[in-house]
Structures are given as C-alpha cells and as structure tokens.
Amino acid sequence: MSGGNDPNPAANRLPLQKRLYLAGAVVLLAGLIAAAILYAMAPAPDSAVSMYSIADPRYQIELQRIGGNAAVVMAQLHQWFDSLWHGTALAYTVAVLGALLAGACFFAGYFFAHEEPHS
Image (cartoon, rainbow, N blue to C red; front, top):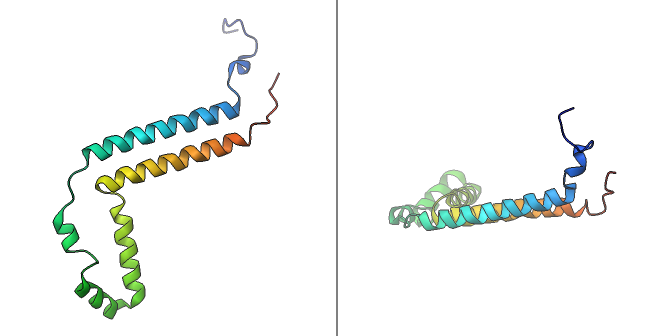
C-alpha cells in the first residue's frame, strides 16, 4: 500500500459535472484576463493599413476584372478574418473564444447533472 488511509482514492475526486463547471469558470476567467491584457497592450491602428485596403475602389475594380465577383467577396472575407488577429480586435476575439469554450464546458457539464455518484 502507499500509506493512505482511504482505500478508495477515487472517492475523493469531484464528480464530472463539478469538474466541467470548474474548468469552464477557469477558462472564462483566463480568457477575460488575457483579453484585458491584449486590449491594454494593443498598438494604435496604422493609417497605412486602412489606406491600402480592399476598400479602395480601384483595387476592387481591378480584382473584379481579373477574378470576378467571387474574388472580391473572398478578398473581403480574407481581410476581415485577418483583421481579427491584430490590435484590439484580437482582444475581442480572445474574449469571445474564451466565452465559447467556457460555454461548451458548462453545456457539457449540464448533461452530467443527473450522474449517479459512484459508491
């Protein structure tokens, strides 16, 4: 034996529902703290990025001429997705992803609410 007084060490563990709720709370707290730090440390927006963006009508006309409307839409989608990972938008992205992951933990924990305790 390992010297423990309890013959069943699994009896000391938390039920799965409580562990999932605790994991969700930890993920939510960590995501919000990380988002606050990223928001505070985000640099000011660069004017050159907005100057040479997809919003320039000359660029859109040329892109539409080369690739059609689908190329313009895909370029706009790519630029939007790329903008999520810079500056203050990154802080919002981290906060939303943390909240979604925590919500998934809470949602999974909800299904284990009627779990029978092991005796």
